[in-house]
Structure formats: structure tokens, C-alpha cells
Amino acid sequence: MSKVEIISLVVTLVCVASFSVVFTILFRNYYVTNIDAVKKGREDLDLIENAIYEERENRNRGRKTLRLVGRVSEYVILGAISAFFLFSLISRFMGNNLPLGKYSMMVIATDSMSLKNSNNTYLEEYDLNNQFNAYDIIGISPYESQNDVQLYDVVAYKDNSNTIIVHRIRAIETRDGEIVYHTRGDKNAIDDDNNRYGAYLTYDRIIGHYNGNRIQDLGIFVIFVQSNAGIITIVSIVYCLLMYDRFNNKYAKAVAERTEALRNQTGFDPSKADISEFKIHYRESLEYGGNQYVYENGTYVCTLCEGETPLFQTPVAETPEPQPESQPKGKRSSRPKLPKEEKPKKKKEYDSFLDHLDDTEEIL
Image (cartoon, rainbow, N blue to C red; front, side, top):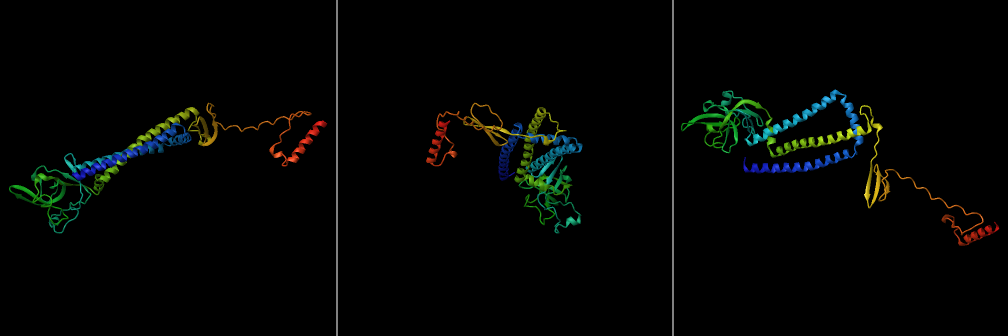
């Protein structure tokens, strides 16, 4: 890998790490909030309804099997994605050549072997039809010795920049007592001489020959996964799935414990109970300034002063104060004060009313 590729890969890994940290914080806060709501009983009605639903679902063997298959499939897909990503990443570091024991798999990045150029008459003359396309994955087998190399073999070799090229041997000759090779892509009209390896190709640069094994078009996914964008995408997907599974298991555990507690406390049977039989009331007490402000179902109920025992109930309406009893007959302690609404509007009328009252007492 070049310095630019190494720097690019490091930047990519930093981006993945940053995304992972942010995602973890957000995801954790979301699940912690939900788990806290379950433990404090804010989701009790939903938990009871869910328990009733699951009890009915468990009676259906088909649905139970389907859930199990879905769970297994999830892990299989996750394993396949991880294996494919590992294959692609190793292939990138190996120059798109992934050794598999004695053999190797190689991703084709160009279309230089996809078509037959009319200038390459030997292709038709010898009926050479083992072409392949860009993004194909092909199998490469090593040679046992240099004597096994044949004219018109499709070989994989390393060029001057250590990039792996897969082209056909067009000619074999001897230079200074050494067997050398000239290669060319079937789609090209000129040899690789001076472009890839100088004047000719030597045996020590040849990795192996194309053995005819080919997987069409799958290499496009390998090329994508090898890219920085692909690395970010795959790592993010795998990480998200693992984090989801981890936090979801914690949430499921909290739900199971709370549901079991509700069953023990209330004695309800999910196989017989109906959700319409349950009602839920939320009550809370807000403390401020030495007082407690009581709410029920989000509605204000009452205020309890400091030292009072909280009573989570709607206060009784205040009763009107009792009216004073009438004075005994024949005795007057003072002039009565009339209610405001009964007081005469004019002062003369009011004085006349008091004089009349005094005369009545004297007569009695």
C-alpha cells in the first residue's frame, strides 16, 4: 500500500471510531431511559398487554418456530457479512490476491481480458475463449516449475509497482540464457513491455495461472468493501447490530423481571386475563420550597406543606363557615352589620332602618 492509501485508511478508521462513539452514546441513552421507565412502572400496562399477547403467540408452534428461524438467520447474516468483509480487507492488503492454501482467489479490477481484439489473431486461431470481465473473481493456481509455463497461458504477475496483473502470455523467448515472457491483455493491441515490467517478464514475478474457476460480478462488492466508504459502511453495520443486540438484551431482561413482579403481586394469568380489565394511574410528588405538589395522571391534585404526610388523593371540597346564631329576643348587644349586598345604598334610609329597629325592641 502507498503512503496515500495508508493515510486514507487511517482517516477512515478515525471516522469509524468517531461514529461508533456518537452512536453508542445516543443508543445507550435511549435504552437507559426505556429501561428506567420499565423499572419504575411507567410501562406496566404495556408490559401486561405484551405478556397476554406473547402467551397467545406461544400457543402457536408455527410462530414460535418462525421467531427461532429469524433469530438464527440474523446471526448467519451477521457472520456472512463479517466473513465477506474480512475476505475483502485481507485481499486489499494482499493486492487483491487472497491465498487459500495452495491456490488463491483474485478480484479483477479492469476489463483488459473481457474481449478479443482483432489484432490478436492467435485468439481465434487457437480457440482461446477463457476471457473474463472486470469485477469477476477468478482462481489462480501456482506453477510447480518454470517448465510448466505454456504459451497462451493466462498468468497473474506483479508489475514494477507490485500491482498484480492478469494477462495472457503472447510469446516466450530466451534472453541471455534465461526464458522470458511477453504478455498482453486480450482486449489490448500492444504488449505490456515497458509499461508493466520493462522489456520482458521473468518467471520470478509470476504468481500462477488462471485455472478456469470464475465467479462473475461478485468482485464489485469486494472492490466496494475494500474502499474507504465500504469499510465505513460494513464496520458501522456490524457495530450497530452488535450494539442493538447488547442493549436489547438488557431491555428484554428488565421487561421480564418487571412482568414477573407484576404477575406475583397481582396474580393475573396472561392466558385468561384481558387488557380491558386493567387500569393504571400515575402519581408523583414534586418537592419545592419545603412543599410537595402532588400530581395524578399528570393533573395537579393538592399541595402538602412541610411536615405533612403525603396523601395521594383529591382533597375534599371546603365546607362553608357556620353562620352566627340569632340574638335572644328582648336583648341587643350591638347594632347588627348587614351584608354588603343587603346594605341600603343611601345613608338616610339606613339610619331610618336602625331607628325603626330600636322602637320595635322597646315595644317588646
